[in-house]
Each structure stands twice: as C-alpha cells, then as structure tokens.
Image 1: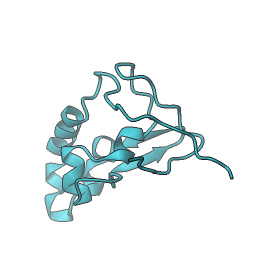
Image 2 (image 1 turned 180 degrees about the horizontal axis):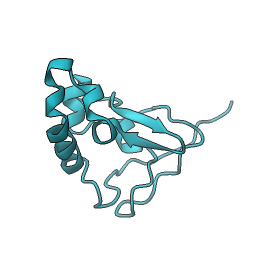
Image 3 (image 1 turned 90 degrees about the vertical axis):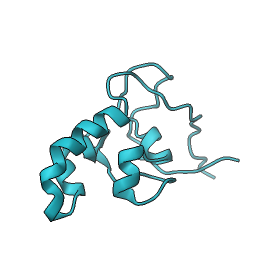
Image 4 (image 1 turned 90 degrees about the horizontal axis):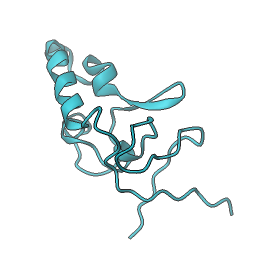
Amino acid sequence: MDRVFMLRSDAPAKPPPGQPCNGCGVCCAAEPCPAGVLVSRRRTGRCRALLWAGERYRCGLVTDPARHLPRALRWLAPALRRLALRWISAGSGCDSLAVVKPASNG
C-alpha cells in the first residue's frame, strides 16, 4: 500500500540509503523517531518537530528542543536534543527505505 505525504517541492531529493543526510524530510514525514513520538503524540505520520529551514528540513528537537516542551519542562531541552541526535542517528547517513515518487500533476 502506498502512503502519500506532502513535502515542499524545493526540498532536496531523498539520498540513497547510507548517503549523508541532506535534509529532504522524507524520513520524518513518513514517521516520527522515538523522541518525535513523544512530541507528536503519535506513532505514525508526520513528526510535528519537522521544520523547514531555508533550503532543507531540520529536526526541531535538535535545532530548538525547548520549543517542543511545555514551559515547566524546558530545562530538559539539552537532554532532549542529545536523545534526538541519537534517535535520528545523526551523522550515520540516510536510513530511510522509502521509495519517493513525485506527485502527478493531472
């Protein structure tokens, strides 16, 4: 069964698995990582922490973790950032096996 999710048309193309992350957003649009499950309050679908940052998607749990925490828990932002980096496997390359097809215009 195909799943459809929308990303910006100017987002970078998804790299092959194992290649460096380029901020395409496919993995986080398909499903949240464990930290994303906490902030999105769901196990499937687009992560609420997926943010567009100029020319690419970024993980908001890495770039601005306090934004995704209730005010009383913002002191946990540094720990959330470290967990997010681990759970998204930052620095280890693309691990998304999603097959991307461009939207048909018709």
